[in-house]
Amino acid sequence: MLKTAVLVSGGGTNLQALIDAAGRGEMPHVQLSLVVSNRAGAFALERAEKAGIRAEYLEKEGFEERLNALLDGEGVGLIVLAGFLRILSEGFTRRWAGRIINIHPSLIPSFCGAGYYGLRVHEAALARGVKVTGATVHFVNEIPDGGEIIAQRAVEVRPGDTPEALQRRVMEQAEWKILPEAAEAVAERLEGESDR
Ligand code: GAR
Image 1: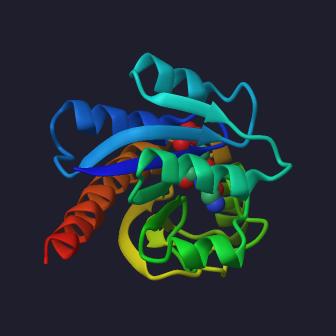
Image 2: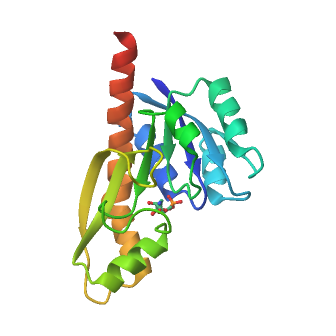
C-alpha cells in the first residue's frame, strides 16, 4: 500500500469519500496516512481524526517546508488535493511530479485555473449557460488545473439549478466517485513502478 496524504481546506466531503472507499476495500493500494489543512478548524480535520488518521493544521508561514517535513517523516508516496484551495509553488509541484493529484469541480479546460474554486466554478458554469458540467481529476503541475487529466465524469445541469444544487450534484455523481477511483489507479501504478 502506498502511504497517501490528503490536503484539505474545508468541509472535506471528498476526504470522506476517500475514507469511505478505503473502508469498503475499494482502494487496496492506498493507505490514508496523513491529512493536512491550511485552515485551522476545517471540518475535514475532524473527519480525519474520527477515522483514526493523523490530522495536522499548518499555518501560512513556512507552509511548504513544514509540509515536506511531514510528508517525508510519514514516508508519503502520493498526495491527493481534496478541496485544497491554496496554490502550491512550482518547486513543490516539481518535487512531487507524478505523485500529486487534484479534484476540480468542472470538465477541464472549462471553468478552471486561478480564481475558479468551490462554488465559484458552479456560478460561472450557470452564468455561461452550459447544459453539461462535471468533475476532473488531474496531475498537479505548476499551472493551476493545468496538469495531465486522469479522469473525468459529466453531470447534467438542470433548469432552475442554483450553484449550491449543482455543486451537490457534481459532488454526488462525479467527484466522490472519480477521486477514489483515480487515487487507487495512480497508487497501483506507482507501486508497480517501484517493484520493477
Ligand atoms: C470540491 O467541490 C472540490 O472539487 C473543490 O472544492 C470543493 C471542496 O469540497 N475544489 C476546487 O475547487 C479546487 N480548485 P470538500 O471540502 O467538501 O471536499
